Image 1 (cartoon, helix red, strand yellow):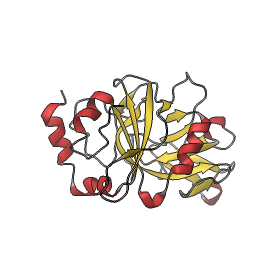
Image 2: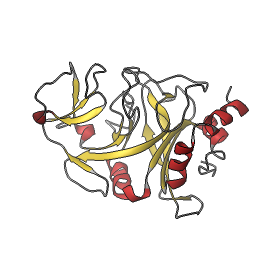
Image 3: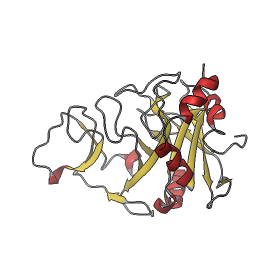
Length: 238
């Protein structure tokens, strides 16, 4: 049960986590109806210094992992909270609060740091590799110590994506290579990423601004409603 104990555990997550939220000026909120749900909605919010969150744009339909949501490793300490825990290969999308990193794709259309895809760019998902949970240019690496890595170039859903900084720095086995990316179609869930239409992802990518320290919040709606006030997150009815 979440209840008061859940609120307190979020509250003592640390000054650094609260500072990250306080300094955030762009927020992407993904909510699902339950832990196992594979569908959700994304709402975008923005604020100026010391202002309240204001919505930006329309609600975006998203698909998440085939396994639903599980607590991930982000900026909030959540390991004592009720709910499933994300692990490598479980097809769950990470629940929690996460910074957003580089955008990757075929052409730059963002203010965020950008990685141009080529046949040498791969995402390493081998927990035994020193490059675990990293996007790397394998042409610059003499010894490929991974047994498997995900190709990004030439894959339709990865024509455009955003790195979700889940499990950063990486701890083996807690999950890797989590992105916002283009969905295969409006009914096919993912292996743990958050997917949406290409049109909507382009909107998101063009809106993101690293100077505004964007964060992604992903939670089941009942959990979000419990912690929103404590963490100064948007509390509108969505």
